Image 1 (cartoon, helix red, strand yellow):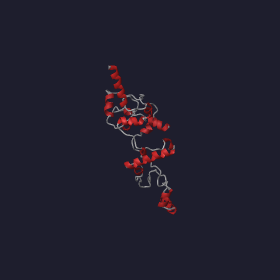
Image 2 (cartoon, rainbow, N blue to C red; image 1 turned 30 degrees about the horizontal axis):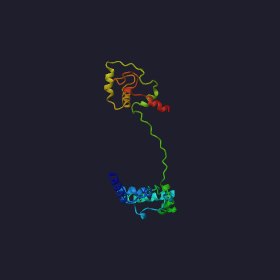
Image 3 (spheres, helix red, strand yellow; image 1 turned 180 degrees about the vertical axis):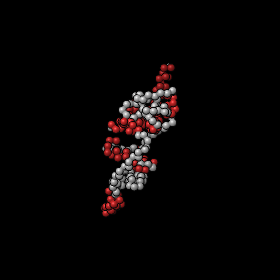
Image 4 (cartoon, rainbow, N blue to C red; image 1 turned 135 degrees about the vertical axis):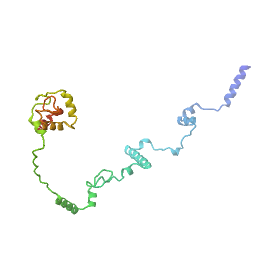
Length: 227
């Protein structure tokens, strides 16, 4: 009795359920199913372009991208308008965004002046042209003090080679103190030669006896003559 009652209940439930053919599941579009599950609907048929993606040629696609870029630049206020800002400068500077000088833009030059005007300007420049004749350099005065260049070329020994005897107490300290009074070795050498050097050294400017005061070096003058 219990078995018969269970079979009858299952039969009744099966009769109430709607009949869904098995093949219908395979015909349901996956996009429609995904849209229904996510809560969104499919786009209207007229909102979807029927033109296949392969219909646009590479050139047409490039033109479309360029047009989109120009529209974006125009919307942001940049692009060609900013590139065409006035960058001209006085005296014939850059005249446009391409960087062409007015002097090289024949149309611009033709609008500014004629051939006759150019010829007149050339004539004026030639009239103002002046050739400066060379003049003789004046003679060097006789009493101007020691010439360290002539001294450097007259000597042959390198710096640090002792040639003259130096006698005294604490020569190194005296030399450091006295050399500090000169702003350059050249000035120290001039003072050294004007006070009896290189034979005599009253201020201890040449403690090693090489004939060069306060580290002065004749080598650069010799190299200049050799070159």
